[in-house]
Image 1 (cartoon, helix red, strand yellow):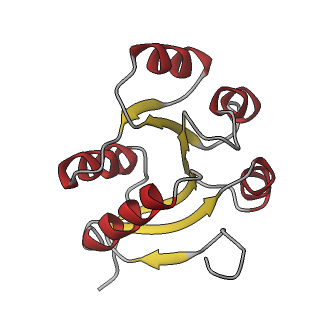
Image 2: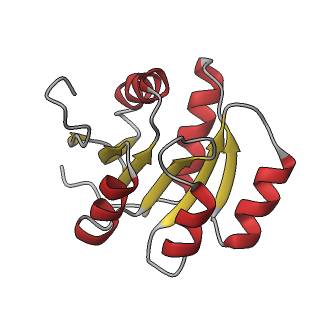
Length: 145
C-alpha cells in the first residue's frame, strides 16, 4: 500500500473459495480484516482486493468479477447505495457494513438488493462473525490432497 496503489491481491489457502473486494477507505478497518483473514486461513481460500475509490471499485467489478463485495456504508469515496444500485444485477454478492448497528442502513441496503448487512466492530469476535457471514456466501471447493 505504500506505493500509492491500494488494490492489493493475495491468496489464503483453505476450504472456502472467495474472491473478496473490500471497498473501505479506513486503513485500520482494512488492517484488522487482513489480520483476521490470515488467522482464518485454515478455513478460507480468499483472493482479495481493496478499493478506496469509486474508480477502483468499478474497475475491480468489471475486470476481476469478485464473488463477494464488502462495502462500507459510511465510505467517504463510494456511496454504498449507488454502488448497490449499479451492481446488484451482477454475479457478486454485496455485503454492506457499518461501524455501528443501524436498522435504517440494513433496511435500505437489503431493499436495494444487497445480499446482507453486517455491523462490524473492531473486536476479534465481531470480525470473526463478519468473516463467517462473508464465507457463507462463498462457494465450497473440493480440496486436492
